[in-house]
Image 1 (cartoon, rainbow, N blue to C red):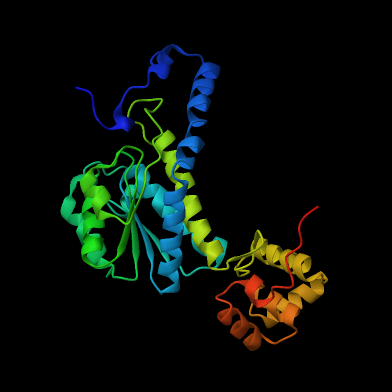
Image 2: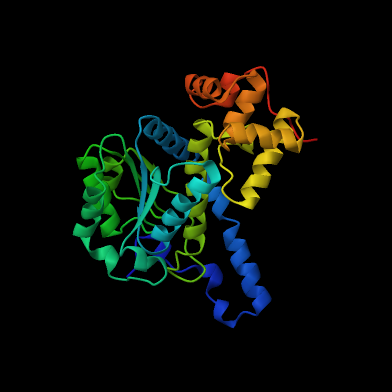
Amino acid sequence: MLDPRTTERRNPRTASIDLASPIEIVDVINAEDRLVPDAVATQRVEIARAIEIAERTFRAGGRLFYLGAGTSGRLGVLDASEIPPTFGADPELVQGIIAGGLPALTRAQEGAEDIIDNGAREIDARNVGPNDFVIGIAASGTTPWVHAAVKRAKERGASAGMIACSALSNDVLGLVDVAIVPITGPEVVTGSTRMKAGTATKLVLNMITTGAMIRLGKTYGNLMVDLRATNDKLKDRSERIVIEVCGVSRQEARALLDAADKSVKTAIIMQKLGVGRDEALAALEKAGGVIRRAIPDAPPPVPQ
């Protein structure tokens, strides 16, 4: 019988891939992968809506949770884990939850996605509430564990979203505040949603969290300014950003960062306004964390 889920259908363009040469396999997969960005682009309005909800969530002191099973869960955990080092954010701000728990990150827990009660338990265990935003990720759109978790989050007053690469049921669409559904079509290998569906999901997650962090003022222009020098690479990057933005020497940049408790963002405000750390922090708070609003007459340099 024909499965109604797009991700489970056979791809006629790859029906003979088992006889293909290595270069033919590469060409076929690459041709299919080129379809993914266009599918994601069809969801631009919905992704922007998710960014708005995420920003509102963070400004209200809430958290963003990604929930998924298998590849979808791993992608959520990956995106969440990269936010603290990239944007200097609290590790609790964005959290990824995968069906089956930590063991499922490295070894498939195939039955975990079907245990409906566990999805709701994950929401209860984290005391999800009205200030939080929960996004379910399910390539097929039908994962029971994810649906149960999202439903429970809504019962507790949270905002909710879904990301899927197959059409969602009316019940799910009626439950969530935003549904992001890039239809990527049948996979190269039937049902292997780690491929096109996984790529589309990664692109969407990148946009949601990066967009929300930008809206919170985590960048100055396109410079990553809300970071702390916790290792040698980040120390060097911090100094280079301060040098470029403030037009100072490396020695002066180090002194500014020391006085700013290693915060690039604070160091920039201190230098641009000619104030101390406390005054810089107050200016940032008044500006909602956005450097441009604290020093609107000092746009960041544009690379030539």
